[in-house]
Image 1 (cartoon, helix red, strand yellow):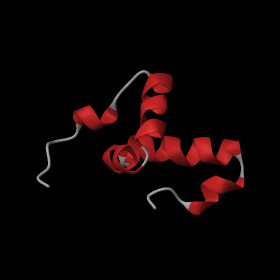
Image 2 (cartoon, rainbow, N blue to C red):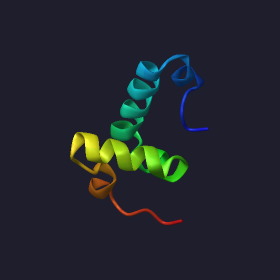
Image 3 (cartoon, helix red, strand yellow):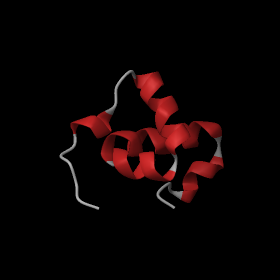
Image 4 (cartoon, rainbow, N blue to C red):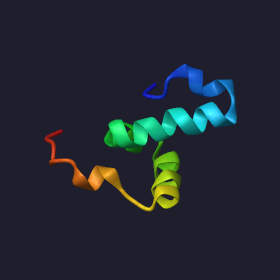
Length: 57
């Protein structure tokens, strides 16, 4: 999984770990956990995956 298992320690850790992924590896989070990515995009009012260069499959 793209999310570090430490995220399961508590809701606060889940938020911290997924927030870090949201900014550092947005496409990985978006692919693995689209609903979490969507909620973080709403929370932070931005979509960092849009700013990355296009990749080939």
